[in-house]
Length: 614
Image (cartoon, rainbow, N blue to C red; front, side, top):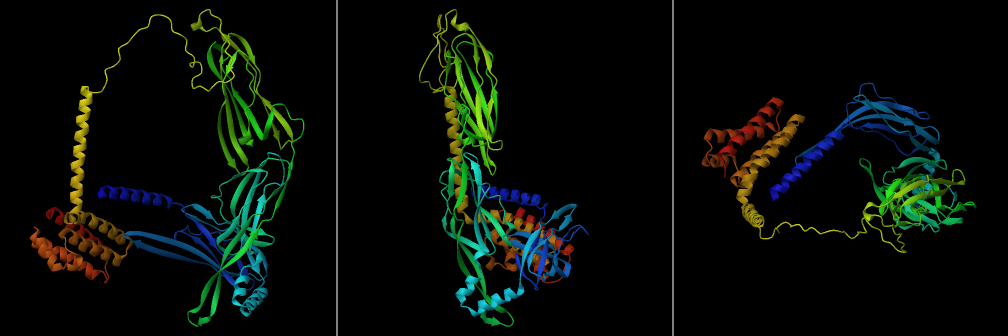
């Protein structure tokens, strides 16, 4: 069983690696720059590409208006290689760096830059930064050093460095018109958590929370300052009453991380240490007033409270049906608005028609623009008496906020002819009236008439119990159970035999080591290659001979191999390869030599595996 799960794990790992190879075709090109800089002090702007092979001459520099370029653009490449438990990973980067300085305070936007890789172009976003006055910054630092440590920490986070706002899409609406409410956090400091969160109850509104997982942090300018903004909560609100409604304040305590340089233990070579503090800031959106207008007077009789923009369609029953047969009249209302609160339109049927409960199906999706989708109503009925009937049109009315007026939609009227039911002969159809009827699955087949004539009896099939097929099935089931029982017992017995388990896995572990060594050989990592080859040789001998690695020597390996049927030359050749790996691990060698060692190692292990079975 353990081997089976190991095979499954290996298969999943292989599929994951294939997925990562496909994803490697897409690259990222990002900008790294500080959010706030000081006028007169130089800083770096870096454009980082996640590959070190862009197309030659494809870099388009950004617009750096308002900045003086001191150096750049300079390019550099980076390479990072990691190997954990035999799994290797590498990362290559191509970085374009500018060293710039801003001479005056204000807001500056770094334009977008672009670069091409294999003909495909990648572009960074325009990035705003804030330049503060250098004299004011130095004065603030001097005041911080003169004040107590607690005040210094608090001054690192200004009152307007963290702002919380509830942004509404509109504040003057009609009753039933949707409002998008976005709880947005604006920060100029590092936030590590929140405490004492109090969210509003939205009294007077029907609310639904919208997902915010797809929203990414953005840079926005608020009151002349640049912030990192993030929507943390978003709601869709439908006012349920008119008048002045109030959205309660949202109160949150944000915890900001502040880093203070420690000047008491300053070292002239290593510099001073840094201490981290948590600063709490209470945030509040305040109460927000919303004006909800009453819907205009004079609503049509078919208006049931729908607000938005809708369309109506209908699927008519057949124009000709037989008496006592079932049919369905279907009405579908589609659009955007308060679909959740829609009521079924009224369908007027003749008195000789037997109506059943209305079935409702829907497909509704809430978005930032409102609730969109459709609701479908099915009106099942049975025509009990023949004749010609006219079913009037179905009307549906809604209020359109865009037009500021009511809109009435309707289906086409239907003329229906009900012919006599052939099964009922010349008997007149009866009209069945009932004050309470239950929904049925198959209308028209819920009432069965008495069948006339002579009844015909048919012989049913022989039962399966105690038949020949039944006995054969029991024998097959017991045989399969016995085979499975003995197979499981053998697997459990073999798994308890540690010598047998180590012997069986010896070749498998060696193959895994050889694959890792082959990757190092291809990447040119000579030291890692020979180290992995030695691990493969020593580990294989330890598992195959059931001897701990610490007790193994090259002499003991030759003796054990000869005792188990390997010739003296082959045993000597095996230890010679191990000696070559020991010597070449820290000495210069070529890829041809590594390839020879790899080929000989695989061949000799395969040869020994074919001779030493147990």
